[in-house]
Amino acid sequence: MSENKFSVIFDLLRTEILDGKYVGGKPLPSAPALMRRFGVARATASAALKELKRCGYALSRRGKG
Image 1 (cartoon, helix red, strand yellow):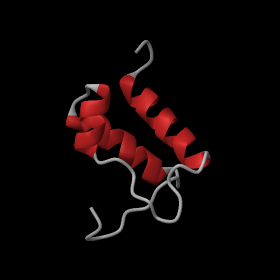
Image 2: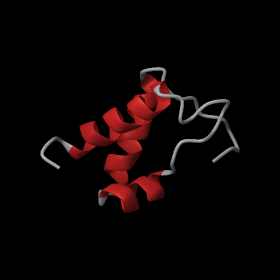
Image 3: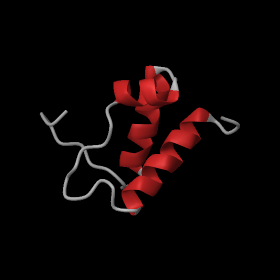
Image 4: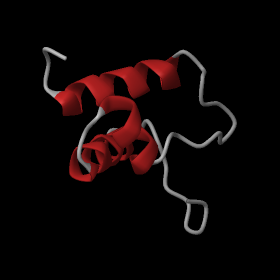
């Protein structure tokens, strides 16, 4: 990965969201799943998910994982 790993994860998930891969409340991959997929630390995976939420691409639902 030549780009910052955080940016790669964020951009890929944002693209998948905009392309309709995660519709109708379908959950995004968990931080541990992103850690395995991209070989990153939990902090990096969690930061990408947090940024998606901050930008309005994802929502958190209490008790939904």
